[in-house]
Image (cartoon, rainbow, N blue to C red; front, side):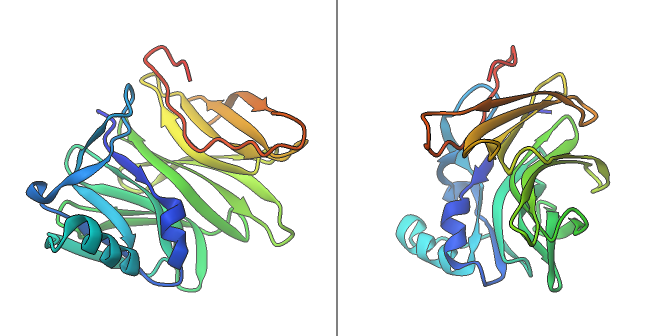
Length: 242
């Protein structure tokens, strides 16, 4: 299955994170230019999906879309989304700061093309809090990269794989890393995650996992002494160069 558009506007969405999450789907005729992250390019393509918290939606609609009418709006109790992936049928899969009641954890909100909830994956057993920073879909599997945080401030990098029915396939936890900000999957089912760690200082970390979520290798880049190094995105080519 072709990897389709995914958006990551986490820094914008966290401005107002106390309000319910809202998703808006616009007609193709109303589409505007967003980033299309596919396997081989970073070209900006017309995208049908946009997501944001309610106040952010209103501001962006006023300045970017004038007064376009959404096809549908879906609202969830979760504080804010971080990333969204869309499959070839128009189903959407969203992750971020996902909540159920008063509890937050690693989660995925799956909606059908009409904006109706298909399923809701939620796991609050990974840490005191858990967040998804990025999401992608490949070969009928959905992958989420993020982290779990504990009361003492420590964090574990987490990569999650679920099937298209919302059943967990595997969960990878790396206690040597802090956060995964991006995830990508190759045609051979290898999973790559990038983010940062604090082994010596704040350093870039890149992981490669096999199709079952087992670590194949870990690479850490330590820049100039005392510098802040963090990977925010990742791309792989057909030869799995990163």
